[in-house]
Image 1 (cartoon, rainbow, N blue to C red):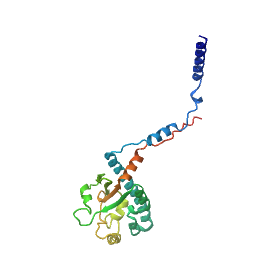
Image 2: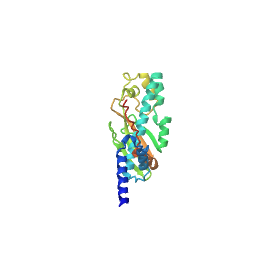
Image 3: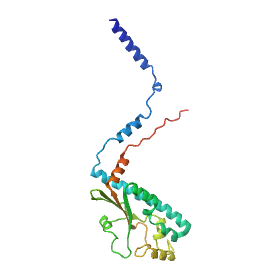
Length: 231
């Protein structure tokens, strides 16, 4: 009976002590949420065929958008420095070192397919199959078990492109148009208008690279939330 009273007294004292602790007096373990998210990222997840196709589009969009951004910046710089004659040498973003490095990292092979002048159709059967239109139409496929395919149209959307591909006598001089035709024989290098399709990005991707990109794209990202400054 005495022992029971002692245990009851001890329990009541412990509860009162816990109740008296304020939240700011409790020491929480640091980084618990980050640890939980990293643990979830290490869990084995099954990647379905549809997941790989989604990753193909993500990877293709990321790579080609990055290349197009570098192309616009490079052309703007070269046009300001040396005009069309100098800028024309840089109109191959798939060969830029930064783009090539990104392509190697994700095991992809990007290329740009252009249209031929005077031809009834584009230069590639894959372009024809895509039914290229001046919008965001994409072609995503899996031609082999370990190979994926991405394609999207290249559309003339801004005045920077018109500076090289526009109308002679308006967007560029006759001499500049003649120079471009000499540098790119067989291609309709000039005489284009805003909204026209210039060609297509075509990217071949390996399965390992697509799976790795999907894993990175879908993993949880740790974001530190700092407490607001009160005083």
